[in-house]
Length: 331
Image (cartoon, rainbow, N blue to C red; front, side, top):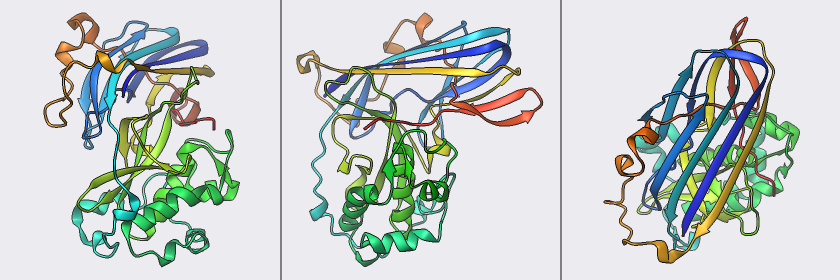
């Protein structure tokens, strides 16, 4: 499928702030399942951002606004093409034993950020039958289907910093929390898995929010995407923006500013399919890499970006605040 995605973030402050230093991850990746066709991003007040990829290959833009400003507006637009996946969990019969010995999997087997090891996980694994499985496909299937039996979806029940222990205590959460809990369960049985942030197209829903799901490593197949919030494998309706060990690696927005102002946030995502006849060239995972230089005029490609926040999460000194945004998606 070919998608047009617009992501707008508006940050309003109760009084002017200054020295905003931010980084943002809103530029989708190109991989074996999708290709980025076009990307443009702009921030107001005018600020020049630089682009780099982090250690996991995620696209990151960063910027600074030194002068006083009462609000920040970020607008990005992209065109992404996805393709369907054909994996069947019943056919994924690779044994779980042995995966943990691969040093390349170490980063995605350990606790990190919000994915902490809680004593309750052993009880929950037994409750859904995870402790009995010996095959990769079985483990992914159980966690994908049964995480919704362990917690309920409720917006506002957690924060972006909530750990697995916090989620279990609350008994509820949003897609970020469903993903963190599923990662914790799979890592306990030795299956490498990672956190994914992005977008999910829902027909008939004009405005969306960012979404989160997981990927598990399958020998001979690669990384397989699964969505415990909706109890399904990811399909061509999913667009990946960034991936990491947990949300802590890939917040859509992160940064600091100087000031004592209170901040309010508005985020909107519009996602719509484009007529397939607009596709001019065949898809190739090896050659279809985003050529940023060909996407827009140079004046536009001096990317403008800023961070947003749900609310301040920490303070580095008396008047510098650190903020980051939480994934939420209504069912």
